Length: 445
Image (cartoon, rainbow, N blue to C red; front, side, top):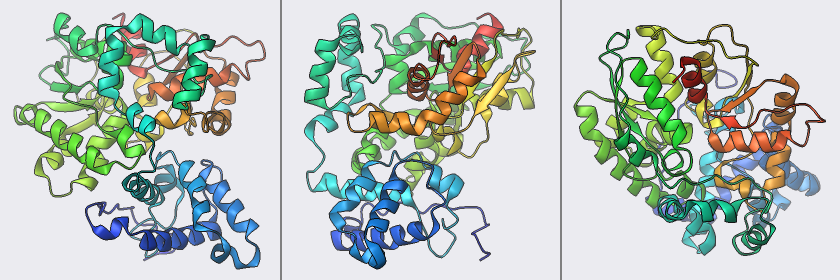
């Protein structure tokens, strides 16, 4: 073992079915062990609010340090974690195979799993994670749902903050009356047989967000892939479970993993690649499900066949070459590399893809936006998320580009909202978009 754990990091499966996983005394001992190491290192001080909170706790304890910190005070540290994985992937020198064996995000997940088992996760918080049910209901009355969730609607947003704990100023995703899966049945793009990549086949895992909240991402993806010779099918059996993971409901995540793997397995057997349309969901398929269900062959098969959308387009460009027709986009592009894309360890694929557009300026921001899925819209977290995302927002304003994109749609909206605080009269992009939407625009699709 070399100093600093210079070997490639590995990640151990989650022992969530072991009774010791939920043993509070053993959890407390592990928290103290890890927190003591983190306190002595402090490389992660600028990633999120978990670490400043931890360091302040220990510093306030005086000369006795961790020994004097109360266990009940750990909750504030845990609550500030967005499970972005950036401490594990980019900062921590003590991840396995280092003998210290630190996995801070999965330790936070374990704490939340214990809280869930003790009934400390509120009923409203759990209901907010039911994205499939909520999406189906909201889609039935999309105009009404969007009216109620608009930040300009002081009446309903005030009620939502008081009852559901959702910050009244946080921008929430819109809903559409016609889901992406419904649109995909009505609009099947013609596959370009002259494209260098002709012959590829891919099944698009729609994801709950694209299906219910932003079908335009899926439509753009299908059009770009078809133009590049890729035959596509759209499948959406269920949400990936990331919202449940945030609250420690690992059993529900395992249930979702099995269901999606069973639905996508036959497509893989027929020679189809699997493309996730949002990086969080692709991360679940590639890495989280195999760590939760390490002995499930269907989950393993799916993880090995899964690609992030930007990763897949770049692979076509490198292996076969893209179809001609890309035109320059004026005004420049600022691209935010989402944490869950970075956690896939695939490089800046969204930026690589956008740089395939000729004569177009592309500036990269590779830092956490501070949103963290549903975490960032909650009353207790919204302003914290804005603080964490401040460097991203200020840099995006300073770039002065016409286009703003993020691989994570929620992060994109969060950044765009935060940019208004630092605009100082400068023109801002009209909206945040997905990188694939700009590729479609450059193709004229």
